[in-house]
Image (tube, rainbow, N blue to C red; front, side, top):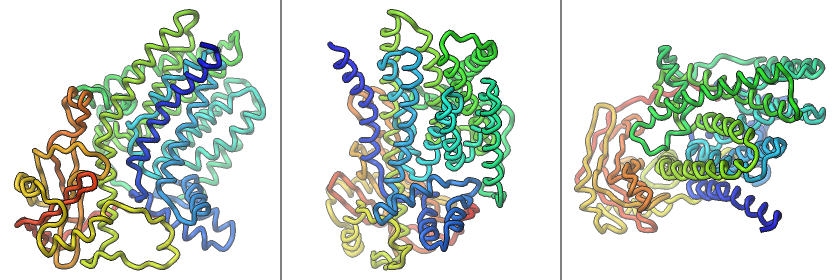
Length: 564
């Protein structure tokens, strides 16, 4: 095989995990706002109607709880300007494309350290997985949580590069970083430390001046926000949560205790990170490098490790009190994965000679295995999230028995793009089922209903089934329909992942038998409700009411304080 053909073959291998990632994203992503996505509609209205650029900049940088999400808002405005409406799938796509920005940087690091293109192959298999499903399918979080990481690592690389034009580029990229997420501010002290270690006083002065200006502008008119209740964690909880945070990449490993393996591997990865940082710092101080780029690599890796460890400390300290199990959630997993691929650099770069190719081949094998584990393990999470978003949108769209959305012809009502949703097909069937108790395909639906238990608790209504075995994906599954004299509600029935590794990997049985739902009373108005099951099997829909009723008491939903 010629060198050109071999290079093309390796490029195609690198593109495989990229392609799989975006196919998976496209299959489950849906144009429905989630939580912090909602205020972006108000931003579009305010930005479009602002009188001057001073007001527009103020609106762009207005606090979003304790954050300033200017880059997310800017991308939202660009999307609205290009397409005439705001589409949350476009925001998710923008965030996921920002994540791809890590790959060319790792290519530069490996290439300049005299490594072949083949050395890059494990990186996309480790970086691009369904393990980060929450950010993948959440517009605002995708841009914020992926964007800040990509901008941060590029800032760190650019600020230590000996080429002046690349250092100059680090200044605007650093400003993009802090305009994406608050932990982006770490790039300023880290960048200053790295520049100090290079001994370039002019660069250090310029970088510190930029940092001072950014801090002043960011915190000018900043107000303290109590968006979350205070929850103190013990020192032991913080330590355990910190290590689990760093090892969260391992959540998908086929073991019984996922948190334990995250904690153990996080501890190992922490020790590896400390070892890399200390030996790297020692080499930088000695400053005896036969090749200039070796020092750049050391400075970059030291800075990236400090960024990851600093972010992990802030997140753990602020969130551990709510339960340390939440620290391995997919929203934060990018930092664990980033630390893993930094460690990979220190595994592969020192290798020389004939050992290099078989060594990388072995790592590629484990990277592919890691990739497969993530898709099999987290597919259920992506499935449940999509169903939750669909159900929530139905409930805020249809406020009465007419099943007609409110006619909002205002500018605000036209901001978000209209997208077909599976429940559009249910609307006529719901009306039929209300009159004759069933509609659509009722084959097996009576038996399914009879094997489902409905329990009214103190604060919620629980629905459980242990026999449902469908393995259909995307919008298929079970939904719970509530009907009162005034309106309808729909809630998703969640599935749990199959714990049988044989069935999971050999037969592609992703779901364990059954489904469950725990529906808070606060999500519904007070009243007497008939309860139906909606079963979606591919294109077939069945709806069945029987004799199940529930009285929903008057309750108040505890809302988090926001400043939008």
